[in-house]
Length: 182
Image 1 (cartoon, rainbow, N blue to C red):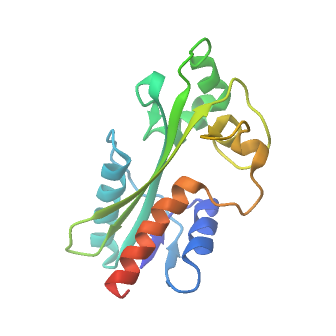
Image 2 (tube, rainbow, N blue to C red):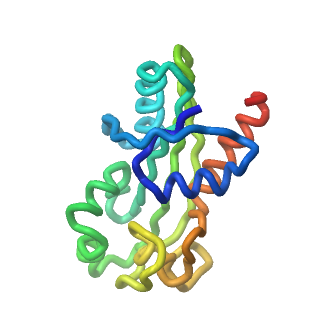
């Protein structure tokens, strides 16, 4: 099984959560991602294309921040939007918006060559902060307040912490692999 990503933090989180029980190789590579509204569709299409190309079981992960008041934006374009406007741009879009509900979504695409791709999805609900707080974590962590908390991930996370939404998705993949005898 090959995890395809260039994101060191994702590699760290997969390694930490899958542990020694599930062996996988890492291919640090960019790959084309077709754009869909659904993270599962993005992950499954990428996993299928890569499984056929690499002739091996492939795992890819697509994650995004879906803000309810913005119709799910930035959604599957979260990385692109973060590179262009950053958290400051998201906060500017949210200025004066009362409904700050959002969810972080992790969609893990898994596919073997010649097989139908599968998706393992993890979700964490929360809300967008009024301003950036904290320097910990990465991406949108300084503006994401998990449900039940008053602090952003940027204020509370420590190096090596795994995102709850990604942990849920990896847990589903791990259960599937264990059940399949992989």
